[in-house]
Structure formats: structure tokens, C-alpha cells
Amino acid sequence: QVQLVESGGGLVQAGGSLRLSCAASGRTFISNYAMGWFRQAPGKEREFVAAVSRNSKNTDYADSVKGRFTISRDNAKNTVYLQMNSLKPEDTAVYSCAASLRLGISLIPSSYNYWGQGTQVTVSS
Image (cartoon, rainbow, N blue to C red; front, top):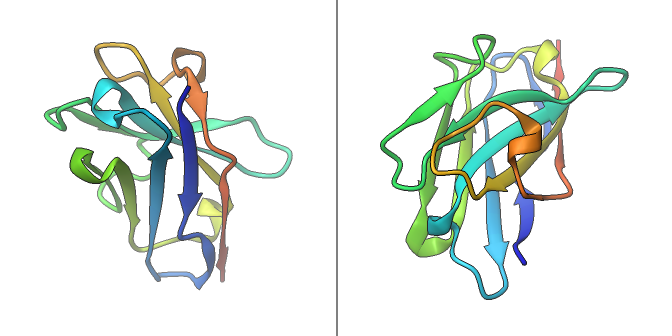
């Protein structure tokens, strides 16, 4: 069983930055999982944000965040990060991290086996 806990969300003005963290707890090593970040705004479906492979060699991003967000991982710390720069009001959502047993990265939520509870990000204009 993998337990994921996100942190780092909050209220920020447009153009600002936030760094989200996702820490895995329990007798598990995130090096066994591809990791992803997803977000869900009120009244909208969950959408893919970014993903990183087990060894960090491969990453993928939603078009809406390319060039502004960076996903990274530190397997020694059992933690995945999402650096978010140049934030826009439309980035406002609950951000959740997820772990997938797939060998490669995936943009599809159903590919992920474990999910965190999420952290709120609010960007004011």
C-alpha cells in the first residue's frame, strides 16, 4: 500500500510561483512507480498536469503548463515535486499526485494505482 501526501499549496497572485511536494509513506519506495500530477477545478473533470518516469528520464506535460511547470522526483527522499511558475488564475484547482505501477508514464488517471488527497492551489488575478 502506498500513501501519498501532498503539500505546498496555497494562495498566490498571478505570475507567482509555488512548489508542490508529494511524499510517500509506509513501507514503499516511489522508485517502483511512475508518478503523476493531476488537477481538478470546481465543476470540471480531473485533468493531467505532468508525469515522470521511475528513473526521471522521461517526463510529459499538459500543453497548458508546458514551459511553466516542472515535475521532478527524489527517490532517495521518496518525494515528487511540481514547480509551478508564472501561475495563472486558470491554474486554480486541487492538485493531486498519483503513483502508477506501469513501466512508462501515462496521462490517463485510470493508469494510476494510488492517489493522494490533494492540495488546493488558488491563483488570484
